Structures are given as C-alpha cells and as structure tokens.
Length: 224
Length: 340
Image (cartoon, rainbow over all chains, first blue to last red; front, side):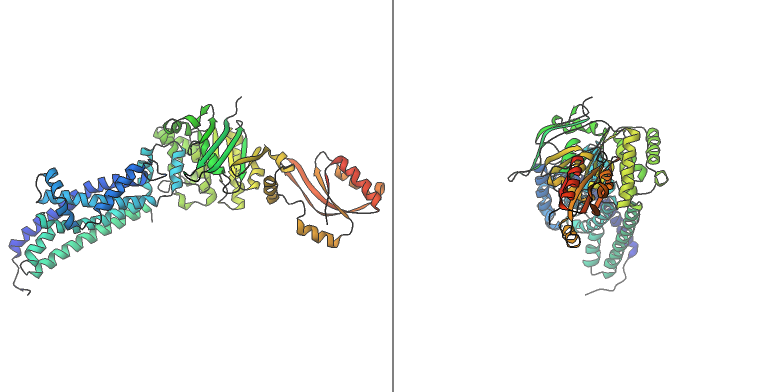
C-alpha cells in the first residue's frame, strides 16, 4: 500500500543532502582509486600479452584469472565473500569505509578489462613505429598507449561511473549509507513513494550530467 | 670502409612445434650511401628481414651488424639508443593519431631527449624538407596517403639517422604518389647522404631508385647484384618474373601465336643494349643481305640511364640470306629463335 501522507522534507531534507554527499564521496573515492588501479592492471593485461611490449605469460595469466574470478560475482555476494579481507584491511566489515573498500575491489577488475579492451583497438603499427625510434616500454605506455586510446577510455570511465553509482546503492546494505540506502530505508521501508521518486530523479540527473560531460570530453579527445 | 649494414648467415625461425624459417640463411652487405632494394613476394620474409636490422625482431642465428654495432648480440635495452640512428618508414605510415604532424615528427626527438626549442627548430626544418611545413598543426587523418608518408619520412629522419629502412613504403599509394615518394627518398639519399634499404614487391620501385637489389624467395636470397645487371640479365625465374611485371618487351606465348598467324617469315628476338649496334646491321639488311625485316614486337627501357631491351623481328628472304644476317647479329648480341 502506498501511503500518500505528506512528507516532512524539513526533517528529511538535510538527511537527503547528507546521503547525497556520502554517495558522491563513495563514488569519487572508488572512481579515483579503482580508476587508477584498473588502469594499471588494464595496461598490464594488454602489454604482457603475447607479442606485447612487456610480454610475460605468467603475469598475464594471473591477471586474467583474477579478473575472471572477481568480475562475474554479483556485487552483493562480493561484499559478503570479501568480509575477511575487508576485516583484515579496514578493521571493520560495515560502514562507509568498508563499503568503499569492497567497491574498489569490485570496480578495479571491471575497469581493468575495459581499459584492456580499449587498448586492443590501438593500431599495433603505431607501437612498432615508437619502438623503431627507440622508445622504452614505459615511454610507449605513457606517451602513446594512453593518448591514442584516450577517447574510448573516457567513454569507458563514464560507463564505469554509472556502474559505481549502482554499486554504491547496494553498499547501503552493509551500512555504507548514501542515496540508495536512503531510498530503501525512508522510501521503500516507510512506504513513502515520494522519497523514492525524489532520490531516483537525483540519481538520474547525476548520471545524465556525468554522461554528457563524458561524451563531451571524449569528443574533444577524438577531435570529432 | 666496411659496409654500413652486414648480415651474415641470418636465420629467423617462427613457431615452437612446427618451425618455419621466415629468413633462411641470408648474407648481404649494404654500403654506406647506396640505395639497396630487397624484392620478394608477400611471405618471402622481407618484412621480417628488415626488422632484424633494427632489432624489432631478433635473429634465431647469424650476425647482424649495423654501423659497427652487432645488433644480433645486444640486449633490447642496448639496441634502443641505436635505433635513433636507424630510421624506419612503413606501408601503413603508422603515424600517431593523437599527435599533430609536428608532434609526430618531434616524437623521436623527445625520445632522444632534445629540448623544446631544439625540437621546434628541427621539426620546422624537416617539415620544410618534405614540403609540409604548412600542415604542421594538422592531424594525420587530414592528410592524403602521400602526405602521410612524407610525414613518416620526416619522422624517420628526425634524429639524422645514417640508415633508413623503408618497408613497402609505397605499396599503399597510387602510381603517381608512389613516384612522388620515391623522388623524395632519392632526395634523402642524394642530399642527406642517408643509406636506404627499400623493401618492396614492386619491381618498378627497384627500377626507379635502387642501386643494387637482392631477390628474396622463401627466406633466401636467390639473386643479387646491380639493378641494371639483374634487369638486363636475370638468372633465376623469380627475378625474370619480377622483371616481366615492369618490362614486357618479349612476346608472351599468346603474343607469339598471334604473330605466327599473321607473319610467315622467320621470327627472332634480338637483345638490344647500348654497345650492340643492332640498328647498324639492320639498316643494311636489304642492300647487304637481301633480307627484309619487320619489327613485330619489342621495347627498349632505361635503368640507371643505361638502355636495354629486346626487339622481335620477322625476317623475309631466302633461307641462306636470312641465316647470314642472323649470324652477323649473333656476333653483336644475343639472338633467340621464336618457336612456333
């Protein structure tokens, strides 16, 4: 039953703002840390392949197995499965910080795959041209791989941002709080559809803004 | 002076279970200042061969020496600085799409650690040399194929290498643009003194710019020598086939059939070159030998400003007179009977 009682925004408003802030905080930290780690792992996945500039079968196989193990696990299960690790690293298994840790683990391996796939699209000939003028692998990674794949990478990260927003809502289940948790507790839990719809709209607007910004940035990088 | 590039019994094997020799015991020497062609069909091993020279691919056995450095025994890390002295251009140009034309040309200079001011000066110099200074701030996708290759050449020359490796550098270009790029390569050789190794499957490229040529088949050099000598007197079938792609001055089987049906006299091929005074004999054919001749096929070309070619003649007259003329021609040059 949906109750149509008037919502007390005077009381819920500040709470909503606090949770919006928490969501942004969780998403930003995850995007930053997992974005960086995912980039490193993605580049390693790509460069350690056979014929890659850092060809290393063992490293490549280990990374591939890791990514293939973590990626298919539904995030809610990953939260439970990672509890011992979360405990060891963070000291607690609930709360915003614990949620962020789990999100970082989940997002890193997803990002690694996205980065790898975008790098595959680079013309191997350009890498050979860089090798032919004596560029080292490190120089090729920083001055060639990333710039050549920048457009698709930006779009990939935009996609990742939305996936992380999704993760952050689920993270509410281990006390991560944030908008998702707020909508469940104050909207769904109290039969207040108004709260649910307000939170939904906020998330939609947030995602749209980021998608527009990502598209614009990618277009600039691709010069189209 | 020792050769700039020396390959000694070089072998490159691919595959772990089924081994295939992409390069199978190649020895060659390229002298400083020359343009050396390596011609072969796709799969002959020429792209692998050229990559062994700058160490992009490593030899399975044998020695590769470039400018006194034994590339084949050095580590990747030790080869890297040497690559600044070996430019390379590619069939697909391989320009960096994320960089401007100027940025592409500056890339090797960054690797070499040049300052920004020095880089800018050198890039302007190079773009001027290849005639693309006005496109410095455009991106590669805005250029035509020929322009892209000119940028590739400017990039390859940035660090003033002694040696330039051209891997099928005109194969993606139309004939007119091909000539434009070949002229530029010739200018690079003549004005900058850069030694060039040209890898190609087009005999026309060899004819246009190379001094010497090696014919590669199944990873082996089957014929090597001065371009004029190979063209005028090819020894192997591979070389003959390559030459026939650009020079068709001898009638093919179907041409011979056509000639036979419309000409009744004796038909011969006469090789023409500068020292053989074939024309002098022919001009007296009637008065001295009582033989009339008709030119039914043939052509004369020039390689490195020396002409050579072949004429197919129909000779009519009494058998004895014709034989006398043929004998005198044989004294001057090679004469072949054209079989029915």
